[in-house]
Image 1: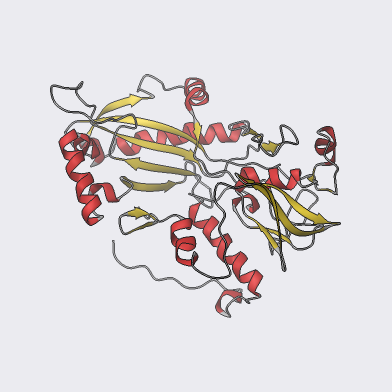
Image 2 (image 1 turned 135 degrees about the horizontal axis):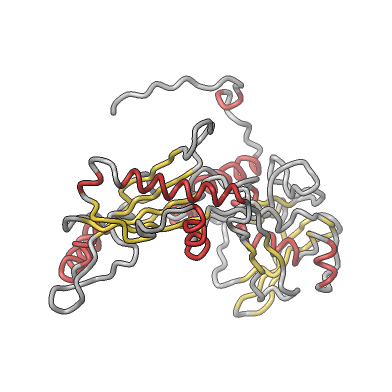
Length: 368
């Protein structure tokens, strides 16, 4: 399974980009500071107002302002800056400079259910959670940055079509060689561990849409988040089909030789209505929120193809909030790609000749 890991550590965008650039003279980093609003002159963004332990501060841009606060906070900051749905802003006492009704709308997320299977043998990550082995593995990671604790422990990332006729996979399964509730253990000191496997089953292309809205005009108040997961009947149908597909995979050779039964949801839960009720009670999200400042040209779009906010000069949004819908998988790398593209746009870099071609490249695959 591909992962953004470097030197045995999670390579976040902060580690991969900011750490390297921190000493550049044209970069100033402010930590433990909260953006309050954008500073507008008419319909042009000219700066940012933020608060830290020293009080309220304003900084001004000689060029453009780039808002990159994520799917929840980017729309919040836009609305606090008088950009967003007029009726919602005026109801909170915020003067509306630009009525942009799509701000905060179109929230999309991957619904997710964790299935748990027992193991016939003492296999997987659970054996490394024994206290003495955990200490040894942790020491190895600290000294050498490798070993079992230098990975995310995901054994496989499976993409499948749950029904015939789909042009792309509609279901993702992240397979872990450990029970999702596993804790550290030691013989004679703790209850016996449950050796097992877990699989995160999630719909890739949900139709349900939620929204992010303001609670008040106070920047310190977190925004109100409504996921609306599984509102569309098609999403529930995909999730129930995904549960059944996962059961087939874990019940097929060679995996079934390792599996010692289904612990959750449990083999007794079979009917569509039973599965739907269980999914509604236990499903979560994947922390893949997107879409609240979505790209497009219609009345509900917030940014254009160059990430510029419609109706506001000198302002771009560069994060997962610009995605029209949630990608077919994790959002980490696509979000990094948006940042890379934003940098090219700000610098005026043109796409390479190869990327401008209309025809698709020819690919040759070799190996197993």
